[in-house]
Length: 555
Image (cartoon, rainbow, N blue to C red; front, side, top):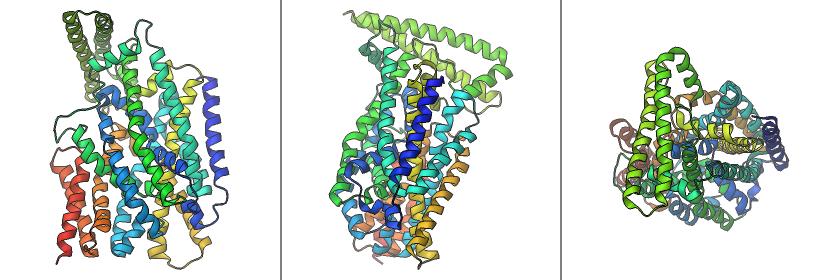
């Protein structure tokens, strides 16, 4: 990055931390620290909910996911609006009227302490594993830009987040999320506009969309019924609805956002805003990845976007790599020529010529994809790990082709996204640790000041934990898929027990407890012994919990 980029990035980070510390003033009681005294307006909660989910993983990996697999990932979110409407009508008033700090506290009111402890423990496992991934994502940024050790980046990021989250609690988290969301969307919009403006003068936006469509990158909706396909209309509408219900209705990192609302109406508005805005936002992010894909038709990308493995190949297998790179260069030139011909053919009324140009273009794309697959195979054959190209594509575009200052702005957006997610997660982990574990089972009677101090220490602990576990992020593939896969292993069981609590008044504590265990067993069995898409885990787990709970409660 150039000096101006560093100035923009540094100023943004200082502003975020300073703003968080300023907004967190007055968090001098447990209620204010964990629930902001229930003073949050709907718009602050709405953007905080969106920012918590829109992590750095979203910016780094979702754009790359579109580059590699097209826009069909947007179907993952098709069930979200349905889920938000359901939760606004049910979960919001139930949690508010129960007067709880956590969603799991309500389970003791409805069932018993054992069920509450079990689900709290499941949340701590699931979210504890995910927080390291969220912190690792921005570490890729400086690894690509400067070659710094990603461990150093995670430490710096973790310390920044811990600073204002420990000091200001949920109030600091929510208001920093609010302004971080604006930084994120500005950075993403700048990246999209840059990708379009840097296209050759004879390639319009419509031409770029046509090329992306011909390559299968604008495949936003897939109607084929395939249990093994991760992203299609049916898995998105059904599995996605169950996942969104679990995430926004059972995951404390989201529930805690709307528990801070001034009223039930304000909390409902925050969810309904996300129902309307989330799918368009994801479409926008994926469309940016598709335009970056077209941009790299006219600017030669590396055969592998993972710089470390690329450099290693040049050293350990120079002859094979040179031959492969030569073949890749020829494939790239062929695709560029085919893309240019297709753009020209599209402007004619000659259907035969257009069809021939489309066929040549698709063949040239296969040649490029084939060369990239050979490069990945060569990496593994020479003792390297499979390159996670998806996570490096967008960053390669940003750092190599965007103007000075704008690179710093996009980097600031990625860091802001990471910090918003990490702060929310460690804050929710601390809340569950203190409210559902420490105050309930370890020290039941103590002063408010004592629990406030324990909350701060718990926040710091989970922040350090995130730094330590971020080390494992490097072993994963597409981070956006990894984090959603992880959630799906646990969310079905959590959702099932809340459905029992809300809608099955005759179900007893025994049925709820063993229902959760049965649901989790079913999910892990599906993961181990079948090849179905992970989105269906949420449906399977939820249904098993409900059926088991109902049956056991009849005895």
